Image 1 (tube, helix red, strand yellow):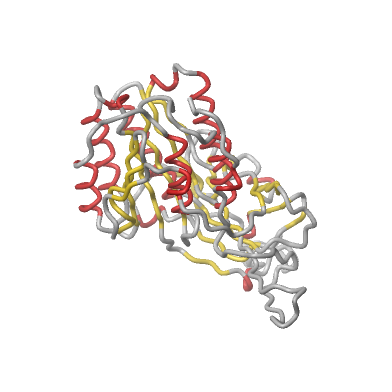
Image 2 (cartoon, helix red, strand yellow):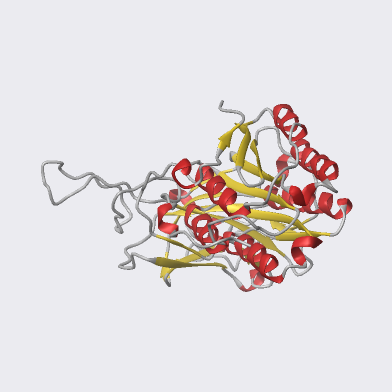
Length: 366
């Protein structure tokens, strides 16, 4: 259980792709005269959403296009600026449902008309993205019995990832240890996994918050995969602060935990909420087989995510903003969506983690 509480705003950094000093709601980048003391140079925030689409059986749905998605922020319609299809084709065949869409060509589909088809000319569509995955491994004294099995599961997960994906490996007990910095050299990451040893109490929320801060300024998809073998018993940060920062920075959190954490209702609820509001999932594995299955499920989820981004339309709300993503068209209503449900407008701040947690250490400073 976390001990005490620290104000979240001390740890909050800017979110999305660009940092900002003042949010400009008009949706266009603006640079104003610097000799005017009443104005500041500003960058507009680009909000990025990672969206999983599944059918009634839980299979991922591929083949969707930008015009299939509707995004609102505080009920204000948003215009999608960039769109990235799921990257399933890079990883070989996986269990999916391919959506069959009607043609917009009047010669092939007489019911189609030019008014029905949206012009995607002003939407940037890409097919490849840089995935940035941070693995956060529990090396506390909860891990003594199953340490080797957990290392094997993490190593297999790293080997299964696309070679272009960048991975960082961190471990934590009472302190956060950055074992291996973000790299596409997966062999070096596996070596970092093998070098870990079990130790002290578990400060999961402290360590997870700092990991979210490391991921926040990165471009592309950002995900944190946590392996925890028990509840938090040493943090000064509440899980609510972690969840809000993950939402506001567009960082997905996946948590794999054991039955030991699930037997603690408070910890289980915190794990499920942190992952759910960020667009991820929480898994409770009873044995090493279920741990491997959970890692495989996360890998499949990352492969099948759609990524949308938009510049927010004018909105007077300077606090929490609610995001709703829906599929357009009757034939798509049967599918299910999973993504983050909002973010908070946050000023760019620079807070060194060591100012709050003296136990932060770097094993791999490169």
